[in-house]
Length: 210
Image (tube, rainbow, N blue to C red; front, side, top):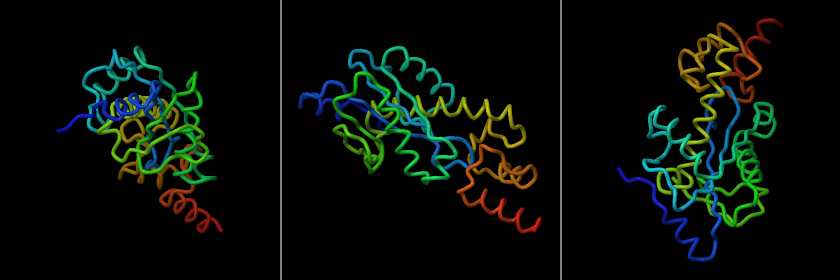
């Protein structure tokens, strides 16, 4: 299994970009909760070992790495809310969260490396989209780890406020038990109403009560 490396950053440093942020988001697919993005500027002299695409790491490894990243790098985390997701769609909301995370870095980065195939609209900084960036670029891998650790913790907290949906383990994704809970317990304020499984339940409820 190949691990992410620093070649994207090294190429940019050779061009004079010394303050390079890696950016990634997590939470496009869930039926509940915000979408979360992180921007990370690594110190080339203090890169935590063992970083990889957050999806390839255990929760314990992610948590330990996230703590290390926060200790040695500049980190910014931002969200787009469920209301924003429903209003502008999940793709635009995920890009909004990315732009917010980048904007919170101070001073601003010289260059931004973004996971995926699109550069968010409204980003006024030099940037490059890196497909599969969380698996090949250390700065983006760091951002993926930080974003997922933060969002998972947020969903565990929301699970305590809204028991029965299994958010502490499914993190808001549409698992079988989560969908069953939606049908049995109904829709919470943290559910994305623009997502089909949630919309369908709301529509069925309206049809039944009409």
